[in-house]
Length: 116
Image (cartoon, rainbow, N blue to C red; front, top):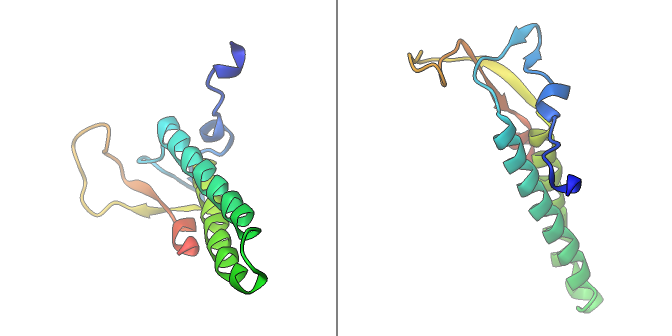
């Protein structure tokens, strides 16, 4: 059952350093897995919408194409977030003492706003 083992190494391939700033509060492997799951759902919905458009007359397909384009754009954005790409470090406004959320910088995914 080696095909079921976890193989998400996106955090190691794309480290938490950009623009000479290291991010203290960043995405985890579980967060990356979640983004990849959303990416898969969005991709399946886009392909399903394109397949469903074949059952409609040509004059009504534009609505399916627009919906598929929106879902495919979201699929690409969530793939970038799951791959730990498309982010920038910002300074934290309120410092916290808890070690899991303490840090000077955190990552904000600007690719999410490009998706919007």
